[in-house]
Image (cartoon, rainbow, N blue to C red; front, side, top):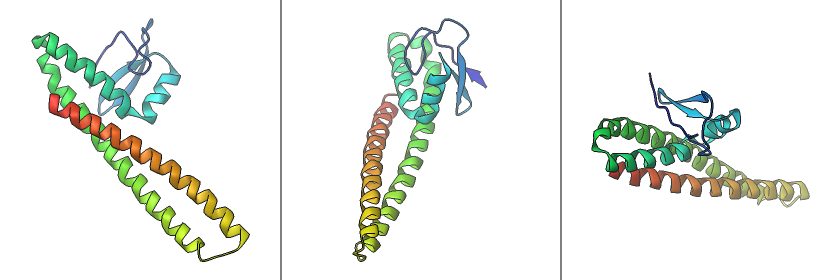
Amino acid sequence: MSTHHHKKCVVCDWQIEDDGIKVEFEEKKLLVCSDDCAEKFYKAPGKYIQALLISILLGLAANPALAESSDDAYKMIVAARTQLVSRYDATARDVDDLEKQVAVLKRDTSQEAKRVEAELDKRISSKSRELKDLEFQIRDLDQALKKV
């Protein structure tokens, strides 16, 4: 396993004063500055990998000697994209299931059914926002892939 050492945290961009905390993504170890940043990284690795890759790509443009990093960058982008697409598919299935439940509840005119329907509508709205966010992240990674 290779370790990419950065002087700044890949999550918050703060300077890492000590050895930092290692987080793992697709057999690569990256450094973050705290447990809080490690937790944030694991919740949305694609978001932070994208920022890291942009910095790598800018480094490649400035220093062609770093070109060997482009293969690692490509693999990391593909891995992050694959994870995002899987999350997108799972979330889309969740939305479909919730919409089916709402359709069934619409036939029931009881107060309880209306309450549950309102709760499901809130969950659908939240999941729809998540889908939109995932779409943007996937699009950004697709653009990064074109640059590697």
